[in-house]
Length: 250
Ligand code: NAI
Figure 1: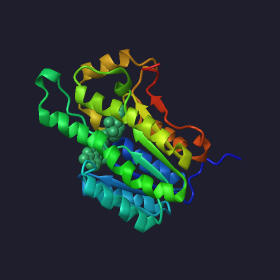
Figure 2: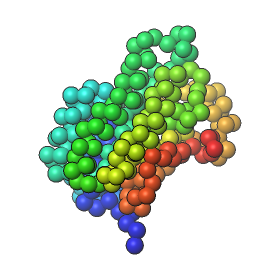
Figure 3: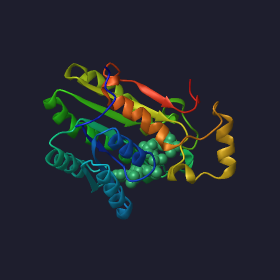
Figure 4: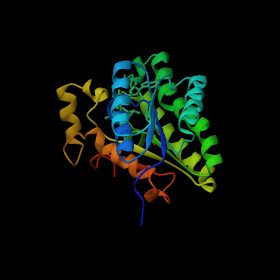
């Protein structure tokens, strides 16, 4: 029997307080995992989510930290190991956009996006994979984006960070394959969250014309794929990028 449940697994999700991350946190907990997550601001949202996870009967912990900061990220990973005794699943989800055409993009907007979206993946993966190597098993799932595969005008910083995440995923998958640690990426298309709320109606209409399924997805449609990749059902999948995009890139 293939086991899709995550009972007795310990998971850590970066940027878990809202949007796609929040749904990933909830879905992992509903599948049986104890879940820790990081967030940047909005402490009330994070506390409410911890209470919701505990009401499901799971251990839960929230850490306010900047995923781009190496020292803070190491501290979070050490605290999770102390609290839960292990880390079986790491989901690198934290991400931001600072869009603009390259000619108008500031160095700060470039640096912030690369640090938050790509360096954070280095920070958490490096810290967590030590523990996973000693456990001789683990799953690392990186949230990329379909634009990291196909490119997008006005998002050179974001696309570079997400293409970087996809390349990092493949390399780390090769490094850790013999240690029974699988590393994969999920590349969402357009998902209803605060990130896409910024788009105006005209932009949303234009996006729908390039999605064969003709709709924007819900965060839970990304979370379900993450849960599958975190389960034993995905033990022979590594180094892959799964597009969850209604057919945008194929
Ligand atoms: P969101 O803006 O709703 O949530 C982002 C999360 O990241 C929040 O929990 C926030 O606290 C956290 N975060 C941001 N900067 C952080 C930092 N420096 N340190 C720690 N946490 C930080 O965004 P959404 O839409 O839920 O995005 C989640 C991931 O999915 C991101 O990596 C994003 O690039 C990716 N994605 C989203 C798509 C969409 O259509 N919404 C499409 C493709 C990818």
